[in-house]
Image 1 (tube, helix red, strand yellow):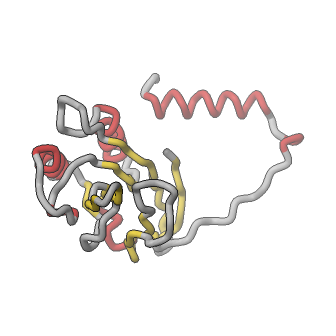
Image 2 (cartoon, rainbow, N blue to C red):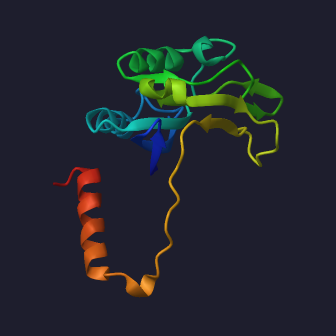
Length: 172
């Protein structure tokens, strides 16, 4: 998981980018508690969110050839959030043993819809049975300055890191 700060039309945006795996053998077909907590945190903190998700679920909404109960449960959950399915078309994202299916979905905050362009399943080899998904985020990421570690105030750095981790993990 990572946090990206970027500029869009003169406004600074904060974007959380992460991947999610929804276990195929889970007794509960809805997303994991950790996934739900992340979605809630991003909504509360007004953070944009993009999730590359191995859903282990089928639904025609994201281009699968059929629907299953896991897919139905995921669509019902997504209807309670501010997340949209960014998939376009029905190009298979999983190719394994002669079987092809749209199993991987990209989810994004509703506020991001106009900023995401060119969503596509790559035809290049991925060294996996899952194919790479590509898209473009409109906006500009500021250039980062490179710092000399010898000039770092390590006490302040550790304190700031501890504070950020505690806030991110809800320990405060």
